[in-house]
Image (tube, rainbow, N blue to C red; front, top):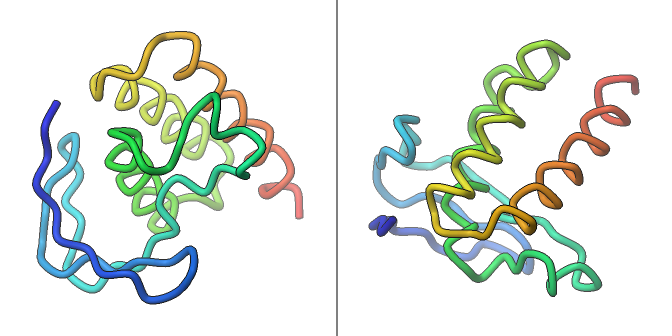
Length: 112
């Protein structure tokens, strides 16, 4: 899947969306700040932030910014991340590994 998105780096691991864009049916507004695919470098062999996975990650970040505190909705958002990775051409094993990573983080984050 090919997406057009204008982003500008605003830090080592932050970027801002420069114009409204729709990714996987999710409308991302101009000015939204994201950390993209915030995968620790150690795990880049599974999924690198500099691949087509970035688009799924930005959509995931935006959805979480809107509704990520609700555990039930977060689970749905994380599941959509998996399907968006698959739609981006990321293979099933890597997509599932990334999904497990966000689910583990979600379990920790929601309980804080």
